[in-house]
Image (cartoon, helix red, strand yellow):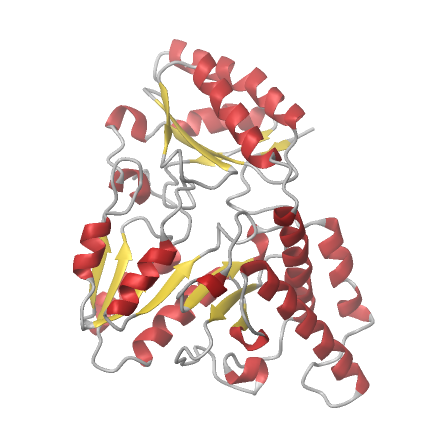
Length: 383
């Protein structure tokens, strides 16, 4: 039976989510904007999904949720909106370890619009340089955008405090919570976070759906203009089945977080400790004390991570590179380079990311296979 440990890339859509979506393809197929019964029935389902997502992240009111096509659209919307509504502010503060959905857009804006982008560094554990962040904020800062949890190491950032700092200079604050939502408790009512982006397929929902949270009263400029959908915050007919699926996924995630069994974090620790005990020359990466409960990034010295993944795949185990090389490039991850991971370990990092579906038996099977793979690769001469 294959073992899937690449849940930070995507998760399996929960069967209950699929079941919730199916009627909206064939039976409840109306347009939510239509005035007749077919439309009102669907509009009710959208309201229910919005409430479920609101409950997962602790949003205070329904209108604060805008459905998007995914995390990338939500992130782009947040950044471009903040720049559009803040006249005279043409600086953005972010980090060196953000997801490409943030960094690629900011690189583009810097090159084409002359924006000043402050990319704040991290230490060897992936922790943000808070003093540098504070110094970068100023009267020309339109937005600070900092991820809640890093997708490669799982390191958590103190976004609640960072949002407070941004507000002291009148800037808006956005957090990419794609990896955090559904995995750790979030209560936005207790924060001054203005915008939060998330994605359905990271929390056992369908692909192609995400959401942007807007704190009540946050000035906003739409990315997609058209009809009156999403209270004119995003034009276009709603992707009803996917929105319903995201709502169901949020409901299931909230229930899991409300009654945790300790399974994911305990299994991650069991896996990581087993690897460290049985394999020499390896180190866990990131802020070990403050990270997602499902994520372990382990760097193996003097071995190529690609070779490890190849052998794991042959054994029916799916994982990913900690140094998630860009397509067509063998350059190590910008995250690990920012952390100054030593060259002997930089290319040997692999990410093992669990989900609430991961079992103890699967972890034991991985521990029965991985140490032998490491021994074999270290004993084999380089090709």
